Length: 219
Image 1 (cartoon, rainbow, N blue to C red):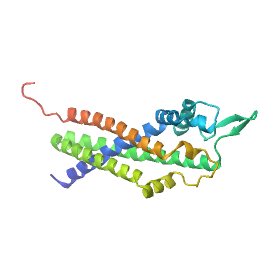
Image 2: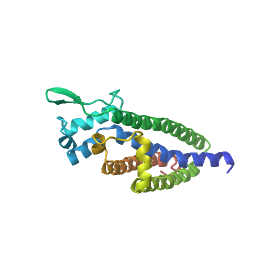
Image 3: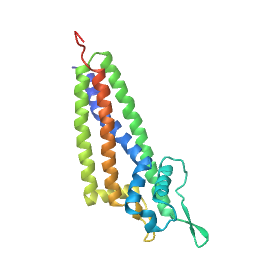
Image 4: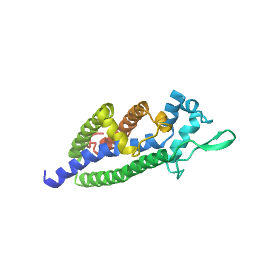
């Protein structure tokens, strides 16, 4: 096998996990399900006394992350007047979190493009067995990547580094966002991301196996 085909195999082994995991990240942290589940689980809206339900609070986060809302502004009634729930620092931090999530879409698009291109070349050149081998390599990379993510999340130093990378300005003592996006929230987000990415990987595996299925003589 020449160098060109070896490069294609490496591209698939790297891009397939990237497509699966980054797609899952965007689904989990843009859809309202995770926010609603965690906020209802800890009765966040009642603790902070927002005057709205936990489901509505989860929908607000989802709308912002999906860019249905431009600004991270939430108002509640307090002593017969509207009061902003989130301060300037919290808004800046959430805007940066959305910016980082949006950046993953560019990586996802590139990984998807190179995956499709590599698939097409290998299928046209009848390299079906090699394509299967590359996909199996992608499963290995996928597993290692998730293990590394879990380790980074559960080690205090690396978790703090990632936290500061996303939330670039230190929160104040009166900020309520740290009460909502807790350590437990990030851990549950990782679990949800793992589950969704595994489903996506299984779908891609099914498609790959169908495309590379060897021809049978009698059926």
